[in-house]
Image 1: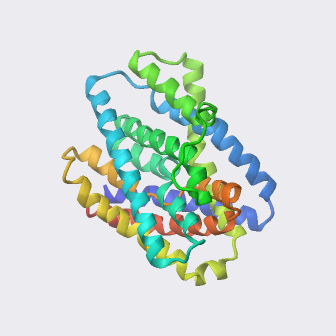
Image 2 (image 1 turned 180 degrees about the horizontal axis):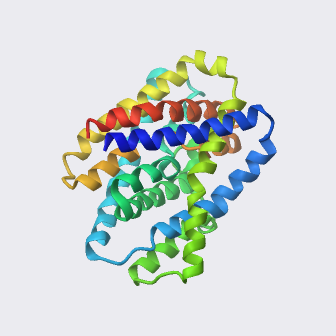
Image 3 (image 1 turned 30 degrees about the horizontal axis):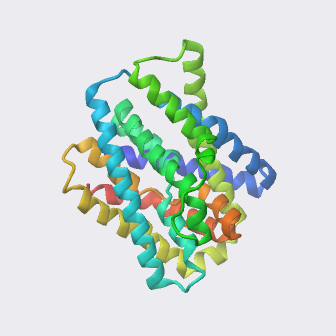
Length: 303
């Protein structure tokens, strides 16, 4: 399994390098990045989610999804608590909100999808999609208040219902429960659209790295502390706790991978919108994503 993870991470690194080079050569500009982000979140990601749920109904998989929802909520609560505690210990007031938000909301599908598909196949993708649903619901309902420092307050229901990824998840789960399938042309289209998810997401991450001041990023002690907490301490602690309640190797492996994912790219948007600190969030995202290429395979040896 370790060789599969290393192979998938090398591919992710190549996509990131393409984005980095394209930005530095001015083939990719900030205006392009905004358009690609909207395309990714509004069309490509929903296509990937919908296709991942085009699987035959079974009681066993339905049970897996139910267990996964509970574990996902537990991981969210744990990372929120870990983010709050570490922020209070390491940062001054006024610097903690972005740290906590970036600690809680991770890049589940963008980085997790190729790894889980290679390791666990269709069953794994359905389980990963469940994690993504729970985390998306939390991000779009509580993210604004967390990044603004107002605490965990619910956003209006209309914001959730208007989110394409959540709508695609709802449609996919309904089709799964009724054992329905998309017509062949739509099924193929969703598969090809979904295949663009990881390349676009990693190219955008690479361009984000190129757009940052690398010297300042590499000299920032705070980003290294964030990586220590989010990429090492949190997943190790989660693994020790999850092992007490899960004995299925697939469920355990995916839960551990989810807990080890880096900070999600959407966090920069939320940090800028609700706190005016998108650049600070991008530093956490960039450094945790770069380090995850190495930490995930190493930590997976523990699982």
